[in-house]
Length: 87
Image 1 (cartoon, one colour):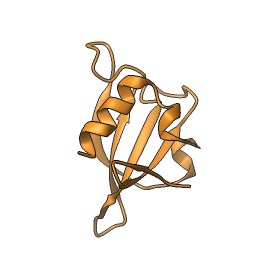
Image 2 (spheres, helix red, strand yellow):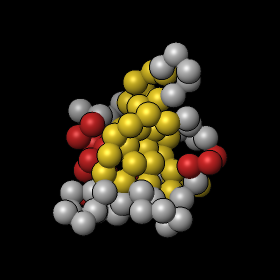
Image 3 (tube, one colour):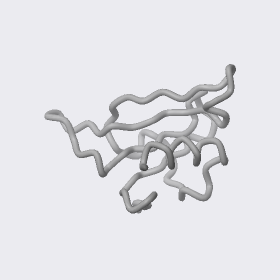
Image 4 (cartoon, helix red, strand yellow):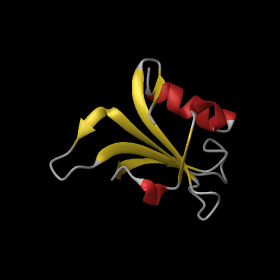
């Protein structure tokens, strides 16, 4: 299941709070590197807050990131971060 944000394909995961970077959004539209990793953003519920977390990186897409969710299931600040990246 993939979701589109502003016409760009993403895969969104929630690890249920097992780590501070609970949410991972994999940017499928950005392509893969030579070893199969995608660009992604990992974040807490409040990625713009001084005590929150929001960091871009590379990751392997897959179940190890948590349960797949829809864009609408992300907290509003996480939606804002992803929306900004997809524009």
